[in-house]
Length: 181
Image 1: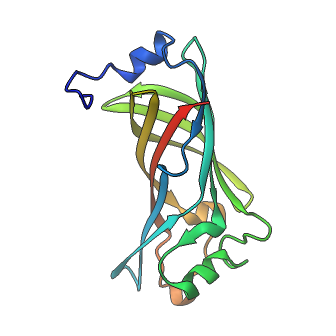
Image 2: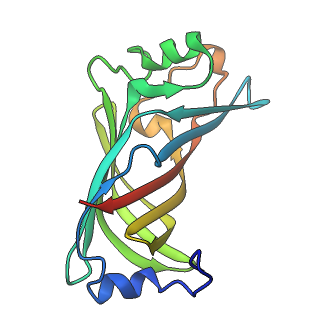
């Protein structure tokens, strides 16, 4: 439903009829990428947020979707300065050599309850294919994409964990707001 109480038009229908065709840009002030995992041998949750998110997307008149979402790896904030320093170091993200984490979208298809996004995730210079389910809504001249994406950090060579305290399994939560460019 839209804020005015009218039924929202299917995003897929808007993509297919050309309504959303054009160039879109991420609104960094209203977009957010969060990280959740477990540490202390799985006993405690660990949450962080990447404070710098940018990106863009294109929807063609034929309904093809492409784009990029980039987070500055050095913008990680877990509310623990010592841990954040470790995450930014060569032990984990190595922001001196790999300042960005990038997801490149090469397609989007209808899926149960939303869409299936396909593309590639690049972390610390390693690129791996990654697909996930998301919800997408379009209203008021903007597109919003929301997803929870499971990622195993070992797939990207991020295995550092003193005393094996931190889980390799992470959940990345994405809330991206796109406006027309």
